[in-house]
Image 1 (cartoon, rainbow, N blue to C red):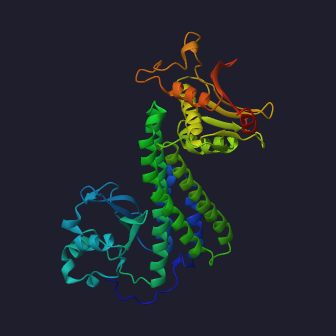
Image 2 (tube, rainbow, N blue to C red):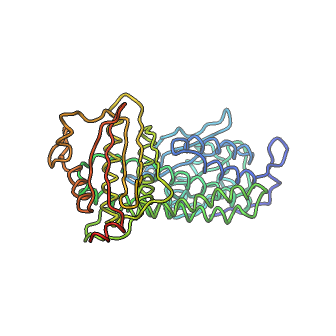
Image 3 (spheres, one colour):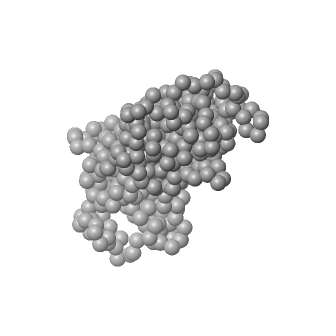
Amino acid sequence: MVAAIAAPAEITRNSEPVDFEKLLSDLSAAFIRVSAEEVDAEIERWLQLIVLAMNIDRSTVVQVDPADGIIYATHQWAREGLDAPDRGRRVNPTGSFPWLTARILSGEITVISRLGDIPPEASKDRDSIRRYGNKSNVAIPLRVAGVVVGAVLFGTLLSERAWSQKEIQRLKLVAEIFGNALERKRVEWEVRRLSAELRQVSQVVTMGELTASLAHELNQPLAAIRNNSQAALSLLTAKSPDINEIGVALEDIVRDSIRAADTVRNVRALFQRGETKMSSVDVKELLLDVNRIVSADARMKSISLSMRVPDSLPLVRGDKKHLTQVLLNLVLNAFESVCESDGPREVGLIASSKDLSRVQVSVRDSGKGIEDKIMPHLFEPFFTTKPEGMGMGLAIVKSIIENHGGRLWATQNAERGATLEFELPAESDRQSTA
């Protein structure tokens, strides 16, 4: 039900017109730049700006717990002296807002200019709205990855208000931007959670299930980010003079989301069972792929991850899945080492070729190093210094490298930490000796 609405005067704040299109552009740009940790605070900051710009009284983001259907407030802002729902406060919709909740979850925008607009069958909702002090309200469904998870509510408590179609469309765009931001936050935290699980898997060969889960969990939301970004571009490009800058930023989001989806597919493919597939492998591309996979983990653990690769390297002949497994294992081991030491957390990926016949890859860390008594046994099967380790990770790495005609070794760094390195024959050299 959308109530009949009279055409209002231009939106004002302090008697001066507000450029709402510029406000929307700034809103979209703001969420491009914030980190996952800053999303919640940024949503509340913009709730305040929108409330003031539209000359209304409060705004609240509510979500529905899928486990029990209970509604709870996640973000809110109200003018001084006016009540707002406590964050986390849980309300049973069947007892308070059954009609409104049903409309929200079905994806319908609900506009109430006055309590008399509420139909007779929604008597529970009318009583609850009156109890909470609302005079007028707009409820915009909140979609995350295309699924309605709650609503963004905009309302007045001091007087009734008519809502124009233009205002409703603007508020719909605000809810879409909030939904995109919450989805990006969920994706980033999910990547971190799954990455933490990945680090705990000691055997490279057991990573298949985890990476398949990663792909399943992230492909759909990343695709949604891409679609929503394209929608935002379509809505914003015809507006204010600053749209060009916003357009460029949103194009970056689209491009990055496509790349992220490709990375997820690649990660899943790395550990799928199947025959070894030998092909030409660009070592620089291999390092870039691994760098993208572990970069979020490095940021979370405050690890300085660097990469030094020449512009041109000979190609090697190998199975890209297996070689990526090798590099991931060495990098994750380096991460563990630097996190267990008290010094700087630095990990470097280095590739080089002294001649055109071989390519060398090094993973250098500033961690605790390798004890002399351990060094001779480092690559032996079932040898481990970890309480819960199985001692197979580096043994598998050694086997993969040797099956590619290469060799693997470890050295202590002069100052601190260790370097694990492997060397592979270049493709031309391998073919000539075949």
